Length: 275
Image (cartoon, rainbow, N blue to C red; front, side):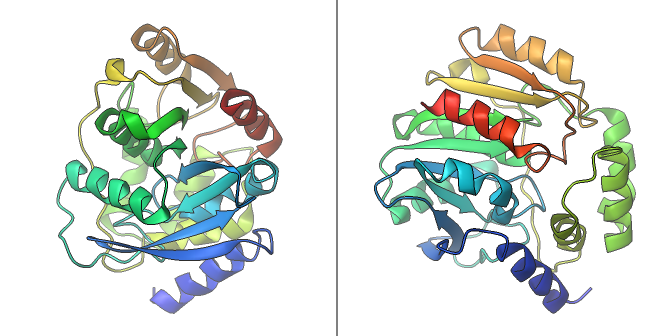
């Protein structure tokens, strides 16, 4: 699949954001990072990290509500599909990702911020919050993977064909299985399905972080019907590891249908927590 096809899907989803959304390309030692910025200039900063292949645009259904109070910075992840460039310092490890995120906050002029991540983005958010707790006021984790538990073996087995030989058809089949009965936004589905075909992607993984070291307020929202892991067991583990955290299951949601499915539910939870 050629990159222009992905770019067309990217621009189509970008058009779903509020008209006043700004695009920023922030220089970091690892390359320029694309950030979608929306909300009042004097709003409380809220950095939002997407899951793998989702791009920062995935938060389009949440931006209008959250942007009433918060200055949203939705990020295209380093090493993933999107408009963030991977140039300069090499990307080799999870430590490189946290160094990149630190440089990104510097470039955005954010000494402190709220931080929200979904899936892989939640894993990265936890790692950064442990590395630089002085910069994170509140941490929101939306169906985090590789944080409190590993992936369900069946999930990995289903994802394997898409990982070995990426194609739009394989990615769509995987999404259809994981989001059965939910029907996420079609424009976003197309972007996700094309992301795996973009040349040069390098998704850096790593072990589970020591979440017991988190000292800021933490919100953990889990998809009730997530096939990435067993949500109830993950919730139990999160409560044991972080007894002061707020942990809840979002009914009727799956891992990949977040944050698109029933965005009002997610928005309400986030606003209550961030306030």
